[in-house]
Each structure stands twice: as structure tokens, then as C-alpha cells.
Image (cartoon, rainbow, N blue to C red; front, side, top):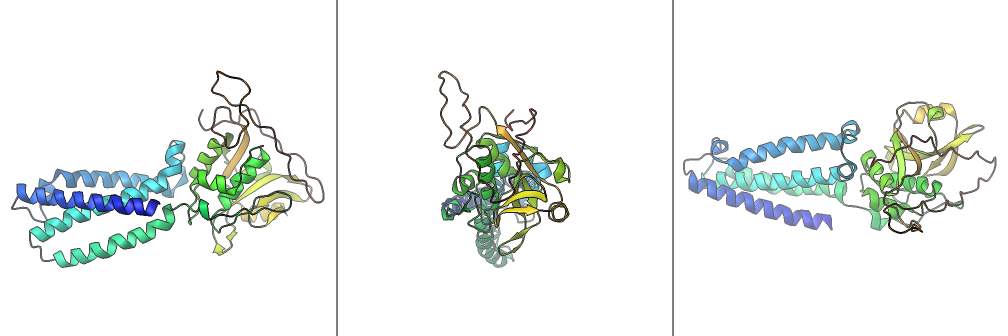
Length: 327
């Protein structure tokens, strides 16, 4: 499990910090907590790494910055940021505590107490943000085959599975959640981009705010409600309906939303999804009948669930300009 691995790694970096502090004190016996940065190259390196972590944190918190990164970094930005932050703090804590104890600093007891409280608290905060929940999900679908979320934070996984099924992919919530790396805090847009690309689904970011201009299917990021209260929510726009728009909501299944409701719930933001992207990794895809090539043939389209009433138009599969994220 991730939590056990990161705790062991922190113990290692803490030990390295202690050894670095001991070495610094042996080389510079006159060193103090206030002047240690002048004699310790390791500390200066740690300060530079802190700046790099700040950039990674910005990419984690803002999607505008994250989308400039390669898809692999978008997928693991959250795990990387938290892991490196914890490792950096453990190393710096071991180094600073050693210098304070060896020099007899008057605040050494306070520093020892702060380290003993801070590191466990940060680990407790990081664990739900990086620990995957895919193994705790259950199969949950409507009678007509729409994937529903089985966890408060798995709406993105269910939406990716629904888009995949619309485009002929054999994927469920569990497989999508593993691709996404869904945690108790959900999934980021960057993680969704990575999962779509891994499934061989082309996509592009939705720029406008009018759903009438979006070619379905599309994953929309809304200000909806989670089962445990308000929060970000991911739904799938399937197509136009004579009374509005057909939405596959991981909480409710198929719903028809009027234009005024759409403008209230959706303020823009999402990923319009296209047909099969040649050369991407797929799940349970039919193997290519030809040999000696790296490309895969798209699987046969899966039969789409039939509406109970008012047959809906078949969504456009998208213009020829759909791109794969790897191009």
C-alpha cells in the first residue's frame, strides 16, 4: 500500500537528514541553527527543491497549469506533490533537529515536539488524498446499462466508464478508477485526460459555456452535489433531446435537463470526447487481425442502452479534427 511505502521512505529521508546534520556539525563545530545554511550545501539543495515543489503544487491546484504538462505527469501530479513534500519535510526535520540538539539550541525541545506532531499530522492529511479507492468500489448500474458511482468520490470514474461504453469500450467503474487513480478526494481533470487517452479515446477541452455548441459525448464538470453534500461533480452529456439535453448522471442515471437548468449547473469546463484514437492503450480491446504493426483496430461498437421513452437522436461522433492526446 502507498501509505506504508511512503512512511518507510520518510524514515529513510529522516535518517539521511540526521546523518547530514551530524556530518555538518563535525566539519563545522562552530555552526549554529542561524548560520547552518552557509555551511550546508544539502540545506541549500533542500531550499531549491522546495521551490520546485511549489511549482508542482501550483500544477496540482490549477488545471490551467496542469494541462500544460505531459499526461503522465497530470496523472501522478497529486501523488508526486504529496510524496515529495512529506519526504522533503522528513529530511529537513532530521537535519534541523540534529543541528539544534548538537548545538544545544534553547528551542530544541520545542522543535522536537513540533516534529513529533507535524509529521504524523501531515501523513494523516495526505493519506486520503493519495490512497486509491478502486479496490473498494462495487458494480452498480441502472437497468439500461448506465454506470453509477458506488463511492462518493467516484463520479469521474463512472463518467469515464459511461463515455467508454458509448464509444464501444468494454470498461467499468473499477477499471476506470484504476486508470484514474481515484482517491477519497476524487479525480482531477488531468487524471481524466490520462484515462481517456489510455482507453484510446480522443478528447479536447471544452472552451465555451453553451452546451448547444458541444458535440457529444462529453464529460462535464459541474457544481453539482455529492451524496455527502456540495462539491465538484462529473456527468456525461449524451445528446440533444426535444425537451433539453440528455445527461447520464452517475448519481441518478439518465436524466433530461432543460437549457435553464444546464446554465445553472454547468458554467463551462469539461472534455468533449471523440472516436477511437489509434495507437493508444485500451482495456479489453479486440486484437488487431493484422500482424507486424503497432496499431490496434478499434473494437466493435457496443449496443447502446435503449431509452424508455422518446427515442433520442444518435450523438455525433465528432469532427475529423478530434485529436489523441499523444499526437
